[in-house]
Amino acid sequence: MSSNSQLNYWDSQSTVSRYKARPEHLYTAERRLLGLLRNRWPQVEMLDLGVGGGRTTSYFAELAARYVGADFSPNMIDTCKRRYADRFTNATFNVADATNLSDFRDGEFDLVMFSFNSIDCLTKAARFQALREMQRVCRPGGFVFFSSHNLYNIPLINQFHFQAHPMRLRDELNRWLAVKRKNMPLAEAMCQESYVRYYDDTIGENFLIFSRPEKQHADLISMGLKDVRLFSVLNGEELTLDQATSPHQSWVYYLCSR
Ligand SMILES: C[S@@+](CC[C@H](N)C(=O)[O-])C[C@H]1O[C@@H](n2cnc3c(N)ncnc32)[C@H](O)[C@@H]1O
Image 1 (tube, rainbow, N blue to C red):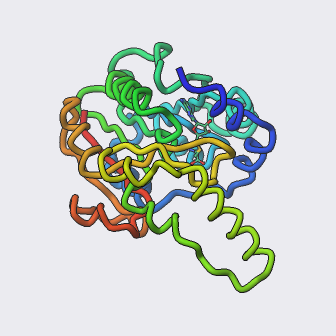
Image 2 (image 1 turned 30 degrees about the horizontal axis):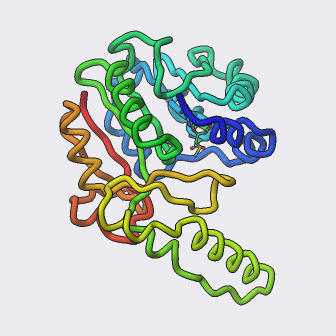
């Protein structure tokens, strides 16, 4: 199960309205999925976990034989139903927690996506439960795809970024102080851990998990996922493990075969 504080944040009217207002678009790394499945799309059954307000829906529902958007926030799912249920007859939207996909059968989907770092909203234990569920509902030979905040980016977030405009300067000062205050015991965790609970001031009072790409990569392989590939948020290019540890890769995409 996921925390009430996370659910309260994501299910609130203000968050849902904000996500609904986001323009539909795909990040360059997500666009790779279009080419990856190329002429197979008319047969593809896809699960889009943490679908939010449906930023990715039209791109994939347009191509796939069946598209299922899922989210633990009932209000996000209501929004998606209102926006897309009539537009795409092959699309359905379900309230589901990523840690418990019991509404879905083993191997039901060709592609399971949990994009835009949604997996980082879960605790470390819940993250691995969600990954096991994603693996379970993906058919052998299918794909699991997600992104996660890069732990090596933390020093850049911790920095104070000077702003010329007085209001922006005030906001940056508030952000910087909150990040400093809430992440006090971080220095030790940064040295020792691979999945660090970090407050970055982007999702209310909630913390996120920031991961070490080389450890996330190794853990995916330990789970039995294959051909694990990493992609850059900056330009969608494939990354070596070394390149993924650059502080400038604010988050990293992971593509695995089941
Ligand atoms: C960063 S938003 C991404 C939304 C959308 N994919 C996008 O890119 O705009 C994270 C989404 O994950 C959902 N989420 C967070 N924890 C979840 C969980 N345990 N199970 C299912 N969805 C979850 C939130 O409700 C939210 O819609």
